[in-house]
Amino acid sequence: MSVNWDDYNPYEPPYYGPLAELSRAEARESFNQLMSAKSERIDMLRALLKANGLPLSGDDDSVQRLAEWLRSEVEANPEHPERLRNIWYAVVNDVALFLGETLINRCPGLRWEMFTAGRRDVAYQKHVITGFRKVANPKYNLDIDRLVATYLHQVISGKPTDPSYFVNVLEAAAAKV
Image (cartoon, rainbow, N blue to C red; front, side, top):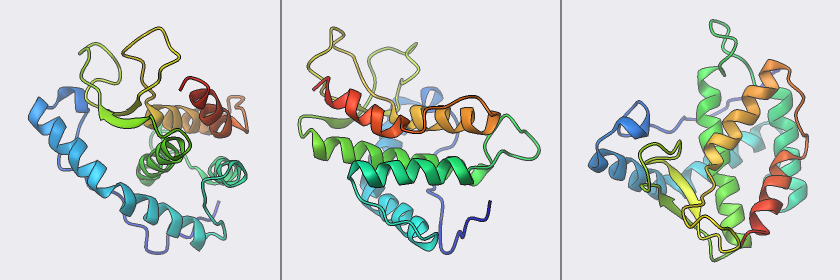
């Protein structure tokens, strides 16, 4: 593993800690700031990948190459091997924004929203994708950040993972629009 971090700068949210524990105003501010930084974060991801010899676009082949690169490069935190090395959580955020925007570009009826429909939901006050019509649950959302993080946790733990997971997630989500 030899990532060229070049000029990669992690995203700095206005508040730290679980979004579900922030006040509604703080969570809204966090959401708005992240949505305002979306293009910049995707550009930062694109620059990181370019520094590592990998072009990034929204087609399935590029999404697949991104997944393969992540699988080969992601690192566990040496002090807490069940967790990712801290900088990788920033990459997770950027990858989630990229995948979310890719999905929205493919399915224009979808959109980012701050999820507020239920304090017990794991997506509470997080940025999720909504607008799915072919689902029974009107609160249905896609927490892409959680999907990317969970996938990379499985990779570092050595659990079997689907090498085409990101492409499959985009395909399955598009089928629900």
